[in-house]
Length: 205
Image (cartoon, rainbow, N blue to C red; front, side, top):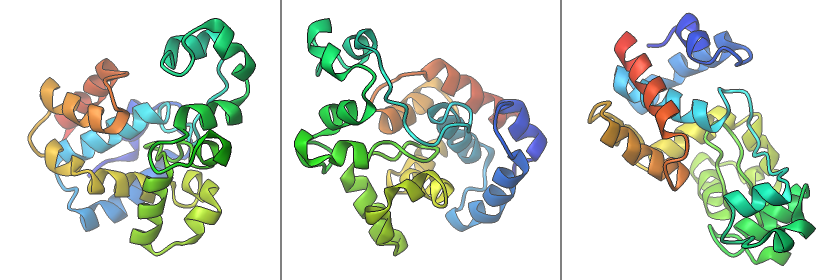
Protein backbone atom coordinates (compact mmCIF):
# COMPACT_ATOMS: atom_id res chain seq x y z
CA UNK A 1 0.00 0.00 0.00
CA UNK A 2 1.08 3.61 0.39
CA UNK A 3 2.84 5.23 3.34
CA UNK A 4 2.42 8.76 4.67
CA UNK A 5 6.08 9.42 3.91
CA UNK A 6 5.66 8.47 0.26
CA UNK A 7 2.52 10.57 -0.08
CA UNK A 8 4.16 13.60 1.55
CA UNK A 9 7.21 13.24 -0.70
CA UNK A 10 5.06 13.24 -3.84
CA UNK A 11 2.76 16.01 -2.61
CA UNK A 12 4.65 18.16 -0.09
CA UNK A 13 1.96 20.87 0.07
CA UNK A 14 -0.89 18.47 0.93
CA UNK A 15 -2.48 18.92 4.32
CA UNK A 16 -3.02 15.92 6.60
CA UNK A 17 -1.13 13.30 4.57
CA UNK A 18 -1.73 10.78 7.36
CA UNK A 19 -5.48 11.24 7.05
CA UNK A 20 -5.45 10.79 3.28
CA UNK A 21 -3.25 7.72 3.49
CA UNK A 22 -5.35 6.12 6.21
CA UNK A 23 -8.46 6.60 4.09
CA UNK A 24 -6.76 5.18 1.03
CA UNK A 25 -5.37 2.12 2.75
CA UNK A 26 -8.78 1.40 4.32
CA UNK A 27 -10.76 1.77 1.09
CA UNK A 28 -8.39 0.67 -1.68
CA UNK A 29 -8.93 -3.08 -1.05
CA UNK A 30 -12.68 -2.60 -1.60
CA UNK A 31 -11.97 -1.44 -5.15
CA UNK A 32 -9.19 -4.01 -5.76
CA UNK A 33 -6.65 -1.22 -5.89
CA UNK A 34 -3.89 -3.58 -4.86
CA UNK A 35 -0.98 -2.98 -7.24
CA UNK A 36 1.61 -0.19 -7.41
CA UNK A 37 0.41 0.65 -10.93
CA UNK A 38 -3.21 1.20 -9.91
CA UNK A 39 -2.30 3.17 -6.80
CA UNK A 40 0.23 5.26 -8.73
CA UNK A 41 -2.30 6.15 -11.44
CA UNK A 42 -4.88 7.26 -8.89
CA UNK A 43 -2.41 9.29 -6.83
CA UNK A 44 -0.84 11.03 -9.81
CA UNK A 45 -4.05 11.92 -11.64
CA UNK A 46 -5.84 13.18 -8.54
CA UNK A 47 -2.68 14.91 -7.40
CA UNK A 48 -2.36 16.86 -10.62
CA UNK A 49 -6.06 17.74 -10.83
CA UNK A 50 -6.08 19.01 -7.24
CA UNK A 51 -2.82 20.93 -7.31
CA UNK A 52 -0.99 18.38 -5.21
CA UNK A 53 -3.99 17.31 -3.10
CA UNK A 54 -4.52 20.89 -1.94
CA UNK A 55 -7.48 22.27 -3.93
CA UNK A 56 -10.83 20.50 -4.07
CA UNK A 57 -12.93 23.07 -5.87
CA UNK A 58 -12.30 24.35 -9.37
CA UNK A 59 -10.76 27.81 -9.57
CA UNK A 60 -12.49 29.76 -12.34
CA UNK A 61 -11.22 33.22 -11.47
CA UNK A 62 -9.73 33.93 -14.90
CA UNK A 63 -8.70 37.20 -16.46
CA UNK A 64 -9.88 38.12 -19.96
CA UNK A 65 -6.49 37.05 -21.30
CA UNK A 66 -6.75 33.73 -19.49
CA UNK A 67 -10.23 33.06 -20.84
CA UNK A 68 -9.15 33.89 -24.37
CA UNK A 69 -6.15 31.58 -24.06
CA UNK A 70 -7.68 28.59 -22.24
CA UNK A 71 -11.29 28.71 -23.43
CA UNK A 72 -10.81 30.18 -26.89
CA UNK A 73 -13.80 28.21 -28.20
CA UNK A 74 -16.08 30.18 -25.88
CA UNK A 75 -14.12 33.44 -25.79
CA UNK A 76 -12.58 33.86 -29.26
CA UNK A 77 -11.53 37.46 -28.61
CA UNK A 78 -10.45 39.54 -25.65
CA UNK A 79 -13.50 41.69 -26.23
CA UNK A 80 -15.85 38.73 -25.86
CA UNK A 81 -14.05 37.62 -22.68
CA UNK A 82 -14.01 41.00 -20.94
CA UNK A 83 -17.58 40.86 -19.49
CA UNK A 84 -16.76 37.50 -17.87
CA UNK A 85 -13.31 38.34 -16.50
CA UNK A 86 -12.85 37.51 -12.80
CA UNK A 87 -16.48 36.33 -12.54
CA UNK A 88 -16.23 32.58 -11.77
CA UNK A 89 -19.98 31.94 -11.72
CA UNK A 90 -20.55 33.53 -15.11
CA UNK A 91 -17.50 31.76 -16.53
CA UNK A 92 -18.64 28.32 -15.34
CA UNK A 93 -22.15 28.81 -16.68
CA UNK A 94 -20.77 29.89 -20.05
CA UNK A 95 -18.14 27.17 -20.42
CA UNK A 96 -20.12 24.26 -18.97
CA UNK A 97 -23.64 25.27 -19.98
CA UNK A 98 -25.45 22.97 -22.39
CA UNK A 99 -23.14 19.99 -21.98
CA UNK A 100 -22.27 17.21 -19.50
CA UNK A 101 -25.94 17.07 -18.58
CA UNK A 102 -26.08 20.74 -17.66
CA UNK A 103 -28.87 23.05 -18.76
CA UNK A 104 -28.13 26.18 -20.82
CA UNK A 105 -25.96 28.99 -19.55
CA UNK A 106 -28.99 30.66 -17.98
CA UNK A 107 -29.77 27.57 -15.85
CA UNK A 108 -26.80 28.06 -13.53
CA UNK A 109 -25.93 24.36 -13.75
CA UNK A 110 -22.43 25.08 -15.01
CA UNK A 111 -21.44 26.74 -11.76
CA UNK A 112 -23.55 24.51 -9.51
CA UNK A 113 -21.89 21.40 -10.90
CA UNK A 114 -18.37 22.78 -11.43
CA UNK A 115 -15.31 20.68 -10.70
CA UNK A 116 -14.98 19.40 -7.14
CA UNK A 117 -13.03 16.76 -5.27
CA UNK A 118 -9.50 15.48 -6.01
CA UNK A 119 -10.51 14.42 -9.52
CA UNK A 120 -12.57 17.60 -10.17
CA UNK A 121 -15.89 15.83 -10.75
CA UNK A 122 -17.74 18.05 -13.24
CA UNK A 123 -21.19 18.26 -14.83
CA UNK A 124 -24.70 17.39 -13.74
CA UNK A 125 -24.56 13.97 -15.41
CA UNK A 126 -21.59 12.92 -13.30
CA UNK A 127 -23.06 14.36 -10.11
CA UNK A 128 -26.38 12.63 -10.77
CA UNK A 129 -24.83 9.23 -11.44
CA UNK A 130 -22.51 9.57 -8.44
CA UNK A 131 -25.46 10.51 -6.25
CA UNK A 132 -27.46 7.49 -7.39
CA UNK A 133 -24.61 5.01 -7.14
CA UNK A 134 -23.73 5.89 -3.55
CA UNK A 135 -27.31 6.50 -2.41
CA UNK A 136 -26.80 10.15 -1.53
CA UNK A 137 -29.53 12.34 -3.11
CA UNK A 138 -28.14 15.32 -1.18
CA UNK A 139 -25.25 15.44 -3.66
CA UNK A 140 -27.61 17.19 -6.08
CA UNK A 141 -29.10 19.59 -3.56
CA UNK A 142 -25.79 20.35 -1.84
CA UNK A 143 -23.02 19.62 -4.37
CA UNK A 144 -20.42 21.35 -2.17
CA UNK A 145 -20.13 18.10 -0.18
CA UNK A 146 -18.24 16.66 -3.15
CA UNK A 147 -15.41 19.04 -2.22
CA UNK A 148 -15.49 18.04 1.46
CA UNK A 149 -17.22 15.01 2.95
CA UNK A 150 -17.35 13.02 -0.28
CA UNK A 151 -14.16 14.26 -1.94
CA UNK A 152 -12.20 11.02 -1.72
CA UNK A 153 -15.20 8.86 -2.57
CA UNK A 154 -16.02 10.96 -5.64
CA UNK A 155 -12.53 10.41 -7.04
CA UNK A 156 -12.65 6.66 -6.46
CA UNK A 157 -16.08 6.53 -8.07
CA UNK A 158 -14.90 8.42 -11.16
CA UNK A 159 -11.88 6.17 -11.61
CA UNK A 160 -13.96 3.03 -11.19
CA UNK A 161 -16.85 4.19 -13.41
CA UNK A 162 -14.53 5.10 -16.26
CA UNK A 163 -12.48 1.90 -16.12
CA UNK A 164 -9.30 3.74 -15.23
CA UNK A 165 -8.05 1.15 -12.76
CA UNK A 166 -8.30 -1.49 -15.50
CA UNK A 167 -6.27 0.72 -17.83
CA UNK A 168 -3.72 1.38 -15.09
CA UNK A 169 -3.22 -2.36 -14.67
CA UNK A 170 -1.61 -2.39 -18.14
CA UNK A 171 1.49 -0.67 -16.75
CA UNK A 172 3.08 2.75 -16.49
CA UNK A 173 4.12 3.43 -20.06
CA UNK A 174 3.67 6.94 -21.43
CA UNK A 175 0.91 5.62 -23.69
CA UNK A 176 -1.08 4.13 -20.80
CA UNK A 177 -0.71 7.26 -18.68
CA UNK A 178 -1.74 9.37 -21.68
CA UNK A 179 -4.86 7.26 -22.17
CA UNK A 180 -5.87 7.73 -18.52
CA UNK A 181 -5.10 11.45 -18.70
CA UNK A 182 -7.37 11.97 -21.70
CA UNK A 183 -10.27 10.31 -19.87
CA UNK A 184 -9.66 12.43 -16.78
CA UNK A 185 -8.83 15.75 -18.39
CA UNK A 186 -10.39 15.56 -21.84
CA UNK A 187 -6.93 16.28 -23.22
CA UNK A 188 -3.31 15.96 -22.15
CA UNK A 189 -2.90 19.02 -19.91
CA UNK A 190 -0.10 18.45 -17.41
CA UNK A 191 0.85 15.11 -18.95
CA UNK A 192 4.55 15.41 -18.09
CA UNK A 193 3.77 15.90 -14.39
CA UNK A 194 1.28 13.02 -14.40
CA UNK A 195 3.85 10.73 -16.04
CA UNK A 196 6.57 11.73 -13.60
CA UNK A 197 4.49 11.12 -10.48
CA UNK A 198 2.93 7.90 -11.75
CA UNK A 199 6.30 6.39 -12.57
CA UNK A 200 7.88 7.64 -9.37
CA UNK A 201 5.36 5.96 -7.10
CA UNK A 202 5.13 2.79 -9.21
CA UNK A 203 8.91 2.42 -8.87
CA UNK A 204 8.65 2.64 -5.08
CA UNK A 205 5.96 -0.05 -5.07
